[in-house]
Length: 96
Figure 1 (cartoon, one colour):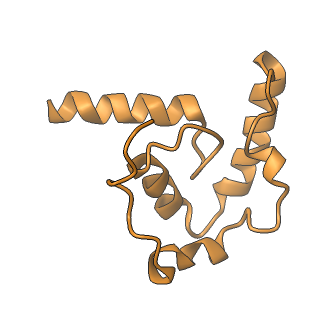
Figure 2 (cartoon, helix red, strand yellow; figure 1 turned 180 degrees about the vertical axis):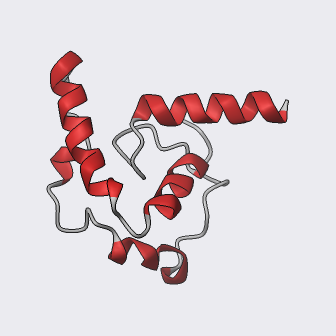
Figure 3 (tube, rainbow, N blue to C red; figure 1 turned 180 degrees about the horizontal axis):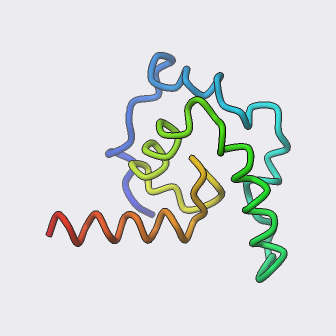
């Protein structure tokens, strides 16, 4: 398991932005795939989750936090797991 030392401290001030999230009242199952979900069903669910993110006032904050934490599961800030992974790889290549 990766170290969580790089994560921001869990203070209320640093996480209060989540109260403004468009997804706040949504079913969490929309954002996290069930075990074994693949292909078209997974893409449709992820695209539906991204609709919540599309007009969210804290989308950028959510996206950056998920990238900082290297969040391995779910749709965060309008990005799927694969999209976040691709962004992180791109950032590493630019930095390297």
